Length: 232
Ligand code: ZN
Image 1 (spheres, protein in one colour):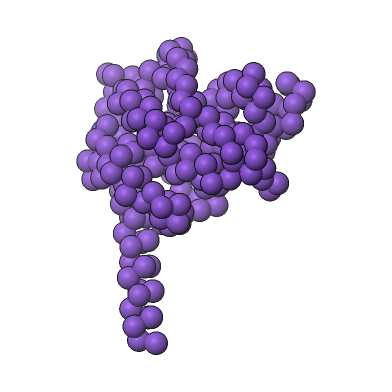
Image 2: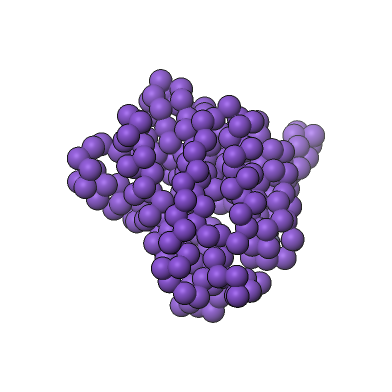
């Protein structure tokens, strides 16, 4: 990956753990970072407020775009349909979680590319991950690579889509946040919980369980490392 430390990058920022870590990653690698958040009818509009305040705190230029049609395009999504409860269990094999918003990253990244082009930005950063991808097909590396080719053909530009978390486990994502010096910011200020509770969240929805398991794995790896150092 050919990073341009003096260039600009656009980060798709949801206010969750992954995209916020990516915003700080981009700040390490690019001179100027712009964040773009989408309001697409998600139940937990608080994440948009968190994204705005996280960007402001980091000194990152922030924009919010309204995509009210996205939630209504397909029924049955518990993230956008107020009448549906968000399931607390993992889906059965072969089924997508009820939180799956079909095409979400396709829309987000396509709009981000047009938005970035208008500002002379060609580097786009997204926090998708294939490792702990929760069953969402548009978080996979093949999709992002394919979309990158499509966007370049569609708009006749040379966009680079950066996915710093693609092959990281949740524990490794916590480690990255720690290396970037923002572990506590990410732990206490971001919203990943499907029940809309920031920080450590409700503690029992699939997103909280995945987040906490990764955090505990990372903390244990540090403790073991320190223990081994003492034995040496
Ligand atoms: Zn939760």
